[in-house]
Image 1 (cartoon, rainbow, N blue to C red):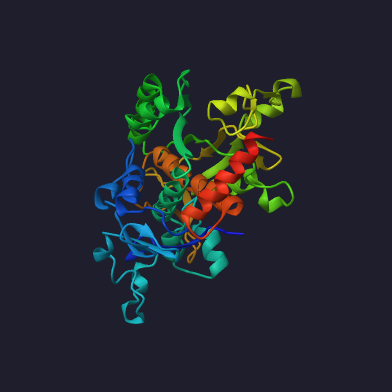
Image 2 (image 1 turned 90 degrees about the horizontal axis):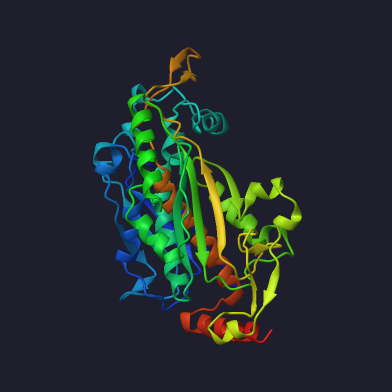
Length: 395
């Protein structure tokens, strides 16, 4: 069974972020521009902070690709931290550069600072905050761009939107997904409702003036997913559980729902479960199967398995915990109360989280796709996929 797996490494103010991806087949077209596009999107969005002016993320493909094609070996990607020149001694691996005068001992509420320091026995919180920082998501976006390139070979698309911000909800117009994506592309907040966007910006400006932050809700939609990804047979093979874990791994995400999500608990079963229909003519028009549903409350997943409908997942992002109006905390060394240390931060990073959510969802869908149709080359996967689709059309 082919598996896609990856590890990331690097600190927020270290020399670079690095990832090694294993399981990408040979023959996939991949150039740095494909990845840099999503890296740039991650740094956009109304309400971002000063670091976005410093970092202009670009990727270096260091292994696994030759002449624009993957070769089947592990792919190494690197993203340099351009602020490293100001941190070379502060983050140096060499003991001669140790300087306890610059220790960070004031843990910030809402961060990994205090529990991380307790767990790893550190009296310098920087040893925790450098890795727990959302800066790490840049390299996961790079992995997601590779996953999206693989899925695009099979016409599977992954789209992220901001559907709510600071309590302002976007109204989803009755438009095709391609039109919604076009609207979101033109939006500074990656939403498809221009009227709601104006109100969202007003809220961002208001809380910024008061030194506060805002959160929101993001939605990811995956189209053209064949039925049969994931499995019901083990808890860790269920596609919805894997997507939920991936989304919850994003910094500041505190809730996940699939399909109608929590609304399903508020309605009777007759209004929740998607009735099943069959029309053989659908296959003649290019559909993968004659089976279909008129509603999609399940979010494209039933029993841990994709059912052929669009996969729809949402995630709730809490407000960024680094405030310019610091909250109260305690020095981990002196135990004296202080106002929490302020690190460079954003007022709103919900649009960036939508890009990160796209990435982690794409990674999990690509992983499930490779498990189902895996091979060592794109051509082999295409044969496996084509054979399965023919089987579905006659099922």
